[in-house]
Length: 215
Picture 1 (cartoon, helix red, strand yellow):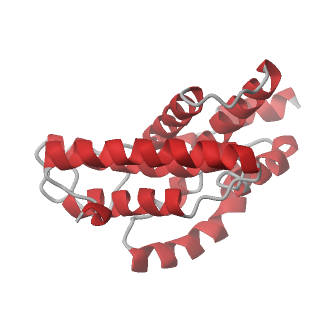
Picture 2 (cartoon, one colour):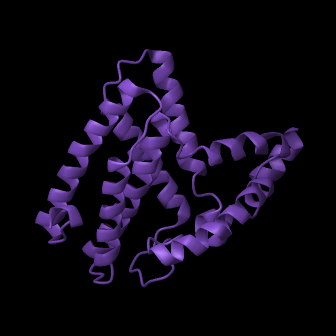
């Protein structure tokens, strides 16, 4: 078992995750990798969770924080082969089919056999209706928005539509949010409504880009 683990840890295919860039379908000034995006999603997810008082005991808190971290790390692992999936609707539909085909294979390639089934389940449930799943769904899109705004700050004029599309998706995530726990659902959705409003107002003031719901 240790031998299989060591082979996986030294697997040269890890460079896929480290080297594959985001937003491959357009010019970027300082491109980020899939690994950069996954790390940012994890940080944002933990920050969001820690900012909400769910009145959970310590054991449950550690469990949810652990779920957020593992889901964030695995949620886009197959994009190390398919590349980034852009926000444009037509392209996303086609790429999602490719992503589904690659999902199982890439986990089998990257991880030891005794770990793959658990990782496949975590990946499949990364954006489920649990607390952690909803937070990852939001943090994933917020990460995409932050990445696009970063390109704008660097002088890239080719990202206004990416920013607005990400804002639209964030608003859609909040509007259609379903959480398994009814009490938590209200708490989480109310938090995201306020947070999203603040984010959109800041973007409108700083970058002059308004969310469709603000027009």
